Every structure is written in C-alpha cells, then in structure tokens.
Amino acid sequence: GAVVSQHPSRVICKSGTSVKIECRSLDFQATTMFWYRQFPKQSLMLMATSNEGSKATYEQGVEKDKFLINHASLTLSTLTVTSAHPEDSSFYICSARDLPGRTGETQYFGPGTRLLVL
Amino acid sequence: GQNIDQPTEMTATEGAIVQINCTYQTSGFNGLFWYQQHAGEAPTFLSYNVLDGLEEKGRFSSFLSRSKGYSYLLLKELQMKDSASYLCAVRSLANSGYSTLTFGKGTMLLVSP
Image (cartoon, rainbow over all chains, first blue to last red):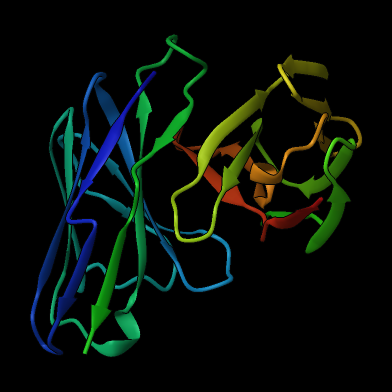
C-alpha cells in the first residue's frame, strides 16, 4: 500500500525558533499534499493544500507567512513553522493524494509530527 | 459551507456489531471516507464511498446514501483493538477544480470485554 513518511516524529523547540517538517510519499507520486493540525481531543483541521510546483492554498485563519509550505517535487512537501510560539504546539499531520485513476484519489496520511514549543 | 455530524462517543462489547452514523451537508460532493485514528497516531484509511450502496471490506463495511447525506460504518466481530476514534470525512470539489477533505469531529468507540 501507499506509504507516507514524516520527519521528525517529535520535536521540542524554544519559543521564537523555526521548525521544518518534511512529508514524503515513498512509493507513489503525489501531485497534492495536505497539511493538517490536530489539537488534543479535537478533529483534524486542514491548514493548507499543497500542489507540486505551485503556491499552497491556505485555509481561512491560517497565516501563510507563519506556516511556509514548499512542494518542490512529486514526493516531498515541507511545512516550516516560523517563529514558533507555545500556542503552535500541536500534532501536525500531512497526507498525500495519489495521481487520479489509481485508487480513487485516496488520501494517505503520514504518521504525524508532535510539536512542543516551550 | 460544510457540516459533518457524527456521535461523540459509543460503547460496545467484544464480539458485537456496532454502527457509526455520519450525516453531512456539502456542495460539490465527491466522495466520503472513513478513517480510524488511535490516540496519538495519525488516521488510517478504512473505506471510500462515492456511489450509493454498501462497500464491504472484511469486518468493516461502509454505506452511503447521497440523496440523504448519510453514511454509516459497520464494524463486526468487535475486538479490543478496535477501540479508537472513527472519523467521517467528506471530499468536496470546488469550482476551481481542487478538492478538499473535511473531517467530522470523530466518534470515540470504546470496546469492552
């Protein structure tokens, strides 16, 4: 089956620093990748949709200058949390959608990255 | 906008059958997904429905009625490891041609011995 990896799985940083999270599709090409955030006991909230070779589309309320997304290839998307603050502490999950026609455009999720900002 | 409703919690006993319902209101409907999420982990894909009817996959089945904006996930022969949150997600196609996936709040299922 399709596998999506995320790195790092867990990160602790000081307030004001930037953190980069990588999302890779390992055995398929993903024209579209999605970034979600999940706070404890809450549902997944879509932050942005990332299409390879173009600018990401951010959901309402998500600051694009704070959450920088780069989707430079069909297998890699990165999310950079700039000047992180304690309220940015959350579980960040990426998902990748395979090319149309393969499996009904199912989204496959990465294992998530737990970010703790002190 | 989109609205997805599913029960917050459900309990069942090992070996039993449980049905988790999901109702939705959306424009540009383009498919409904069910995901399983254990605490502290990312969701894992369970099923996908885009046409009306029942999709069966082992102990898990999913049903969709597009006219009623309704789906359910049926879990048979429940096992303790099935204790998890079950997320209903609706894919919608925007005029731009891009699709997005909106998740419900999830149903926490607790399976007891």
